[in-house]
Length: 301
View 1: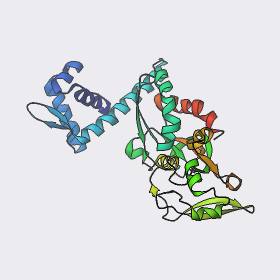
View 2: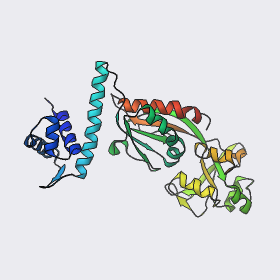
View 3: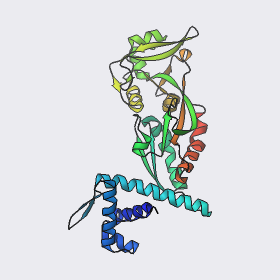
View 4: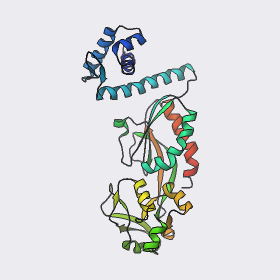
C-alpha cells in the first residue's frame, strides 16, 4: 500500500512546525517516529531535506522544493475527496501564475484584488517575466501566453487577441518629426527586443501586400514594459500590443503612427495549463475568472 501521501503530510508539518517534536505533537506521533519517517523519505529520494543540529532544524533547498510540491499534492487530494463526497469546500491552496511583464502589469494585477476577495483562501504566487518558462519544471499552474501555441502537452483557454501598433510620444514627434510612410522609419530611433533577432523587422501593409522592414535604434530591451517606458520618455518609437498601450493612446501620452499601413497582425492571448486528468479547483476558478474579467476587454484590444 502506498503511504507516500501520509509521509508528505508528516514532512509538511515538520517544515511548518519547525521541529520533529512540535510536528509529532500535532500528529500524535513521537519525535523519534517522525525522525525515522523523514530519514526514510530522504533515503528514498537520495537528498537531504533538513540540516540537523542540536539547536535547530533548517530546511534545505531540496527540502523547500519538496515541501511546495507536497502542499500542492495534498491540496489536490483534499479537493478530489471533497468533490467525490459532495462537500462544498472553498477553493484554496497555492496558485502559481506566470505572465509577461506588460500583461501582468496592465491587465492582470488590476483585477487581482477582486479575485482575492472572491477566493481569500487561495494564495497567489505570481511571477512576471517576458522570458518563457517551463511550466512543469517551475511547477506553474497557469501561464498567460501571447501568440501561437506549439506544445500539445498543455491545454489552453482563449482569453482574447490584440493587434500591435507603432507608437511614439508627442515629445519625440515634436523633436524628430512624424514619419509619413514606413520607409521613413529608417531615419528614426526604433526600439527592439534583445531576445529576438539582432536586426528586427516590423510588418507593414504596402500596396496591398505585407512587407517586413528592418528597423533599428541603438537600444534593446528584454521586456515590453521597459519599451513602453522608454517610448513614453520620448526616446524613440516602439511597436507594442494595444492591450499594453491603448490607455496611453487614449490619454494622449502616446500617438499611434502609420495606422493606414498597419499590417493588422494580431496575437492570440491564451491561459495555458497542464494537461492533467484532474484540474485543481483553484486552477479552474482562476481561469474562469480570467475569461470573465479580461475576455470582454481583450475582444476589442
